[in-house]
Amino acid sequence: METRETTYTLCPKFEKAFSILGKKWNGLIIDVLLQEKSQRFVDMAHKIPMLSDRVLTERLKELENEGIVSKSDGLYQLTDKGAGLEDVLDSVRNWSQSWVSEKECNFKNSTNSY
Image (cartoon, rainbow, N blue to C red; front, side):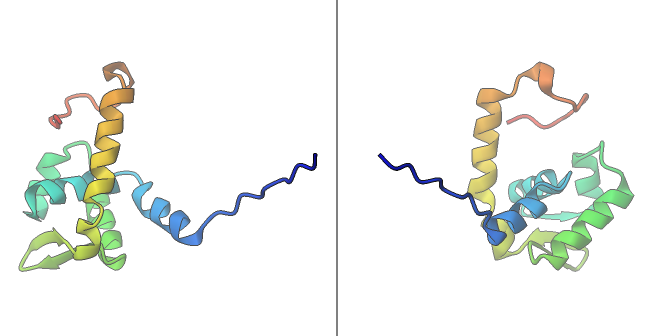
């Protein structure tokens, strides 16, 4: 019997998606906007207190450049592309509830509860 070796090929679109979602804080920023729809910068900063204003500014600009977040009249909101991540983040939230223990969580004083 002949065995064929299969070669795994990384999909460039999948790789791009993980480069966005895998960047520290992006998932939390997107989640805040999914929950609250539109937010002022200061409100997001209060909801993710362990994130510095400088990094929040950088991440929001990056997410704007990716077409995931838009800013209008001082409010940040998700674009349709960003809102399309809702099921993805729901799946991650469900996975975390099943598989991540409280002891494994790095964020002390986190106010997020799911």
